[in-house]
Length: 110
Image (cartoon, rainbow, N blue to C red; front, side, top):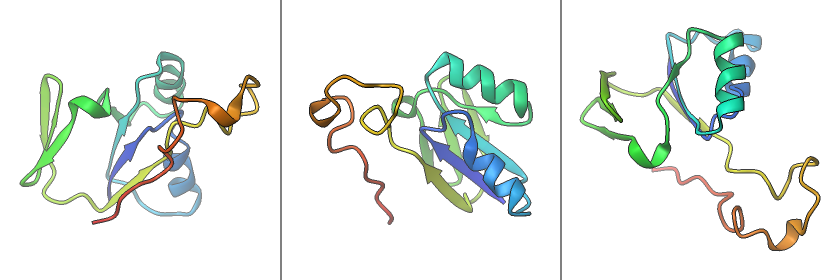
């Protein structure tokens, strides 16, 4: 299965697929937080990190990233966790009105 994970964090989606026994042939992770990327790389070096989602696009079977492209044919699964500062227990300041995540907890399925 070819997976594209948006806002990947520490790659919990990959771990969940492994634990569910779902074979993953390619896992592409879009994440920008250095700590999350480092954690993901140390625990799952086979994951392909593609950087900022704003600099990635998919067109006619090819995933274009900043400086690289990967021919995939089709992506079998798109997963993602929206930026979660409003929901995190680590962030305690004014969660209700945080502009960084307000209105972003949506993924569109086409």
